[in-house]
Image 1 (cartoon, rainbow, N blue to C red):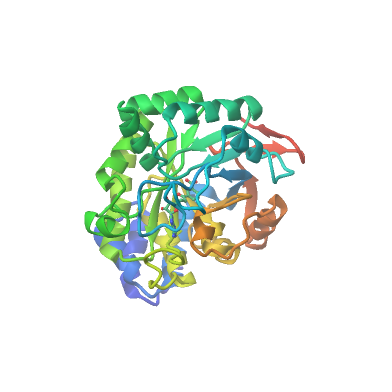
Image 2 (tube, rainbow, N blue to C red; image 1 turned 90 degrees about the vertical axis):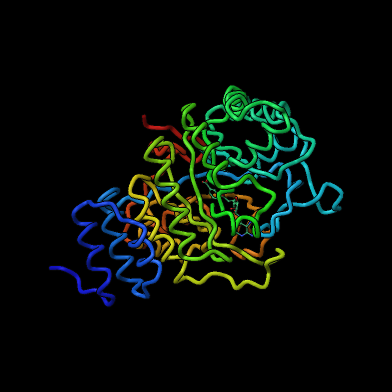
Length: 372
Ligand code: V47
C-alpha cells in the first residue's frame, strides 16, 4: 500500500525513490521546504534500509586536538585562539602521545585528529606526531587533518597539496575527516569563514586525496546564515565529486553551535531541522554509502531517532571533544560503548561495530580484531 503523505508534493519523490531515479535540485528544495518531516523521514528510511538493512554502524574512537592556536578568525568558530591568548594551548609531542592513551578502558580503533592552523608547527612536526602514534598504537587508524589543514600545511611548506598528502600518508595518515567544508557558496563563506580555503579548493584537496587512494568523509555546517538553496547546492557539489572519485565514505551534517562565537545572536538548531538534515542528505547523496549522526552535535536523543530518518552510523565514543564544547555544547564528551549499543538497540536497530573503513570489528574489553 502506498503511504499517504501529508504533503502531496512528496509523492513524485517517492516515485523516483522507488524507481531508483536520482533526485534533482528541485526535489532537494521541496524536501527542505516541506513541513512533512514524517514523510521526508519515511522516504529517507526507505533508502537507508535498502542500503544497510537494519544495521547501525558505530565506532570506538578518540578525538585528539593537539592545538587550538589558529591564524584564521572564522566567525563560526569558538575553538580557535590567537597564539598570544592566555587560554590558547599547544601540546608537546609527548603530551599528544600520552593523551592519546588516556581516558579509555576499551581499545579504540580510531584517533580523529584535527586542530587549528598553527603558524609555527611544521609538516615535519605533524609527521613526527603521526609516526609516534603509529609506534605506540600500531593498530589504531589515524583519521587526521581536514582539507583546510592540508591546504595550510602545503602553503606553509611551499609544496603541492599532493606532496603534502603523500608525506602525511608516509608518516601514518590512513584517512581524512570531513571537516572544514561548512557551506561551499562564496557569499556564505565570506561571512562565516573568510580565512579558510574556498569551496572549490576544499573539493580540489578532497579530489587529490581520493586520487592518492585516501578515503575521506565530508560535512556541511547548517543552521547559521545559509539558505535552503545553499544547502542543496552544497550537497550536489559533494555528489558530483563523488561521481568522479568514489572517495567519500560518510556524510555528516553538522549543526551550528553559536555560543562563544561572533555569531552568538543566531538561534541554535531545532530537533526538527536536525532530523530534516539527516533525511535530505540521505535522499540526495545517493552515491555516498553512510550518513552519520554525530551525537556530540545533535545530542544522543536526536541521534537515536535519526536512525529512523536516514542515518546508519552513530559516531562514536569520542572521549574528549573541544570544538563543539567550546561553542556551548552541553552533551557529555564520552559515551561508553555499552551506551551506544543501548541507543541503537532501543531504536530497533542491530549494532555493528566498525573500524574507520567500515570493516566489522570484534573485540574483548581491551583488544579488537578487524574482520577483513
Ligand atoms: O570543521 C566549528 C565545525 C567541524 C563550530 O569526519 C562547528 O568523521 C558547529 O568535522 N558550531 C569539526 N560546528 C567537526 C567535524 C567532524 C565531526 C565528527 C566526525 C567527523 C568525521 C568530522 O565542526 C569543523 C566545523 O565545520 N564547527 N565550529 C561551531 N561553533
